[in-house]
View 1 (spheres, helix red, strand yellow):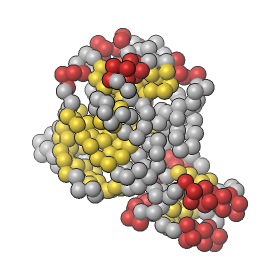
View 2 (tube, one colour):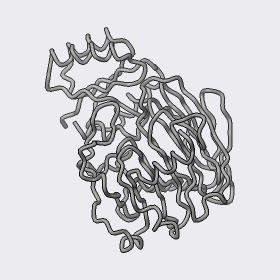
View 3 (cartoon, chains in turn red, yellow):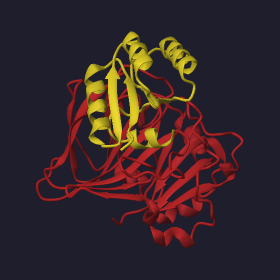
Amino acid sequence: MERKDFIRKGLLGTGMFVANAAMGNVIQNDVDELKELDVMGFNHLPNPESTLTANMVLHTSDTRGHANHGWLESKHTFSFANYYNPDRMHFGVLRVLNDDWVAPGRGFDRHPHDNMEIISIPLEGDLEHKDSMGNVAVIKHGDIQVMSAGTGIFHSEYNKNRDKDTRFLQIWLFPNKKNVTPRYDQLTLNVADRHNKLQQILSPNPNDAGVWINQMPGFIWAASIKALPRITKCTNPATVCMYSLSTAK
Amino acid sequence: MEKTNILYIGRNAEIRDTVVRLLNKREDWNGVGVVQDDEARALFADTAFDLVLFGPGISADEEAALRDYFTAQRPEVKLVQHYGGGSGLLLSEVMMR
């Protein structure tokens, strides 16, 4: 799919906001649940009968799950780890959207993943990554990292900085194929290209802009609240657009 | 305390060990894990599992055969695809049953 077509499709896709509480008065939508999007087996595709298709789903920041482990503070948009809310399980194929702050020099020790498309997007600071495929990398603000966990990988992630937190979005999507060969990729994007406009950062097509995954939704990043009036019409359930507008912890 | 008995099946032994360790960190869960389907069937016949988690590396045919076997033996047992390989989704997968 051509980039412009993909973005156009994204603009018409189902939208999801993760916004701070102050945004609540701006968005004319009182839908804040996912009951129509039941888990539907492996492919977890959005339900075409859903009455939510003409709406966005608003999760205000203060309704997210919260965990503070000292070295890690995390806001969970959906049920994750010890946060369990049966009304916040997933949004289509989007299963995990964690907003993580990692203390200087600290991080996630070696741990496994399988059968998930895992995307990490640093917002502040640098994240050092090592995995069982032999990849050693540092991702920083402006970068996007993707792992297709497939049959299984192990990796670690640490805040490479000694003097400041690293903040990053940890995103997991159900794959459209089980047991793929594990894969790692990262890409540096031009942050200026998302200033008050949408930037495609991920696609199901390896030849498209951004990184690619084994799944269909497109993710589009909106950098500023000023972009909101242009991105509020999401009607097609085939695509998941994610707009994260929150900056506050 | 009544424990939830959980059988994990996955072809990656290191991930199996991790998941079983995570399951058994909770006092109210009792997890055992195998990599081979024959082991799974044998354990299932001997233990009153409440939940079976399917991990990575199991082909569609193998999983279908296991599901048929488990359902024929004890249809009330919940069969769940485990995603993620770690602790992130375990609680949700067990609680959703």
